Image 1 (spheres, rainbow, N blue to C red):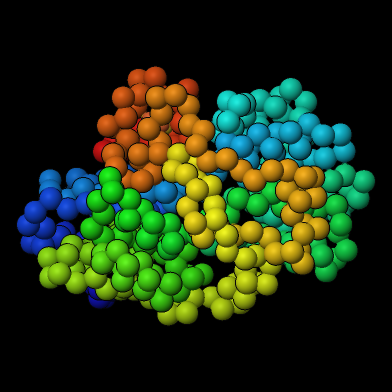
Image 2 (image 1 turned 45 degrees about the horizontal axis):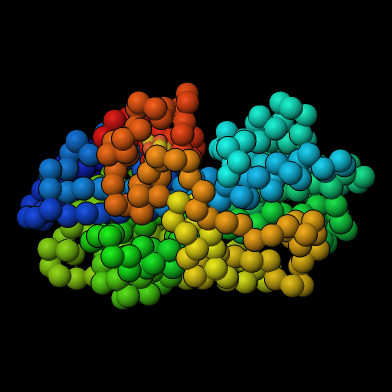
Length: 360
Ligand code: SF4
């Protein structure tokens, strides 16, 4: 799958394999927003046969963050003596009250953009009289870095730092998607960066439960095309195996140090996914022993609520792979990046933003 040779030769070979293997309508999910953007940016859909449909999944961390989490962050940012820190992507996503962190900041709430959770710890260290809260969104790619920041805060005696947790897990969400009666997915293109943390073996339960092939791929066009080729060939042959198409970054057991850190600080629990609902055992909660760094416990905040999309927005259907963005009645009409209705149009990794920018 990762044979040597000029990229053009590999691209042509992968496209040939795809066209030869697709003999009926197939639906494959690329799961992660980074793949969605890469597929659009490189125009890869134009190389596929018409019967092959690539669906975007729930892998945009900002998109699946419940609006009630954003509301809670806004409320914290309005609290005297508290600063909420976050990645820039979160600023324009409306919460359940249709308010954004950006608008709240313009109205005087204390919101600062940081480039990492460690920056937020540093801010807390430099401003000991201020409560610094970091919005902890993301999948297995980002959660270890946030866990490392929490550990650094504790070891450094930084008591005024905490995380508002909204972490999600990719493999159990894939299994749950396949079990939904209105969802039809016949293969998964698995994200290389998440897989570098969780390892190849993390997908075995997905492939076994859903009986679909899972192929891990990097983010170069040739990685993606070879990954898709591997999936459609497995479907043609009636197989459902986990294949590592990104061995230069992904190993069987993932990153043991990152996994140990996650295990130390978090425990698996149910998670609210925006537009999808509560999916059992697809989230990470802060362990009791680390409660002092959990903003939800520290400030007495309730658990997030999942189903709070704006009226008419089909982001839930897009993120579950039931439709593709142009099938939403609001796409490119009432909903554009300049005036987004749903989170999938706001985030740079959102499926609707990708389709709007690059076309289908
Ligand atoms: S086009 Fe807008 S409203 Fe429709 S699904 Fe996408 S983000 Fe939601």
